[in-house]
Amino acid sequence: MERALGVVGKRTSLLMMREAYYGTRRFDDFAARVGITDAVTSERLRELVASGLLERHPYREPGRRTRHEYRLTQMGVDLLPAAIALMQWGDKYLSDAGEGPVTLRHSGCGARVRAEVRCEYGHEVSLGDITVALNPTPPDQPSDHPTGL
Image (tube, rainbow, N blue to C red; front, side, top):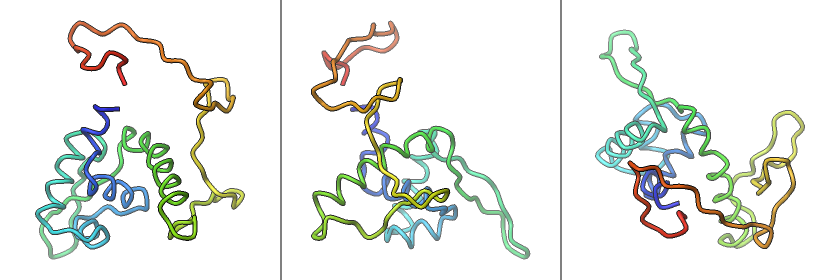
């Protein structure tokens, strides 16, 4: 968890990832939709690219200089369940109506999208059903926390 927060633990990093999930790709759109300065936008995009969540792709509009757009990598797509879980938690506990400003729906059937904790066999798992087992620490990666969390 600590390593993951090192990558996306800044508020603006998560908001930029939210916008990437909504389809935002261009610098000016990230800055406007997140409501941050160009300097912060540039720094966050640089960090998200360096971390492997986004990748830069050049594009050029007629008569303009070459610019870059930012697309989700597989690593960025794989962060989506955590982003949905965080959104779902905030909607439940931090909004006045118990509902956030947007609802995510499955385009195939219209049902709400939600994050769940399930085992690899598909069983829904509650906190009381989880056991923690230490994995061997690779020699090149020292563990800072006794449980690895």
